[in-house]
Amino acid sequence: MMIRSSPTRMRTSTASRPPDNISTPTMKPTTPPPAPFEDAVTFQFGDSPELADALLALVLAGTKTATCGALHHFNDDEPVPQAGRRDVVLDGKGRPACVIETTSILIQRFDQVDEAFAVAEGEGPFPVWRDEHIAYFERNGGYAPDMLLVCERFRVVHIFDRQAS
Image (cartoon, rainbow, N blue to C red; front, top):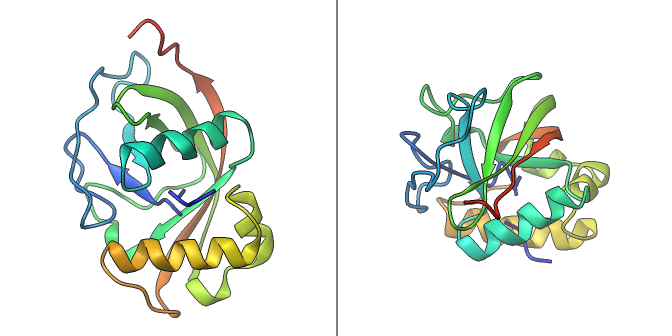
């Protein structure tokens, strides 16, 4: 499986949030999240609708319970997640798909990410995770072994019915 991602918070920010990965266009949700999540941060994993859907499927299957993103892509509009924060994950069409709650955050260098975290991202064994994430970062603003990542673990707390939207 190719990465998205939660790599990393490989997140594509949406709504009025700037993109986490600078080459990814900002997108508004096609359907606003319902209460009580209407003010939550909304995002898609990955840098394409296809990758967003593939990574979302891993989240919904319980395979993907972690993600990461480049620290320098976070700012006041897209703050670094904190334990307890709930975000709405959008599918590749921009529809709210689920709500995740951040359970932990660790800021560390890319070359310090361990196998346990990579496996929790649900995208394959560590060498695959590493290669896919390097490729992702190279096409989204640059990669360096010492780049700082926001490594997030999360759990799904709500799944939306997308058939109705």
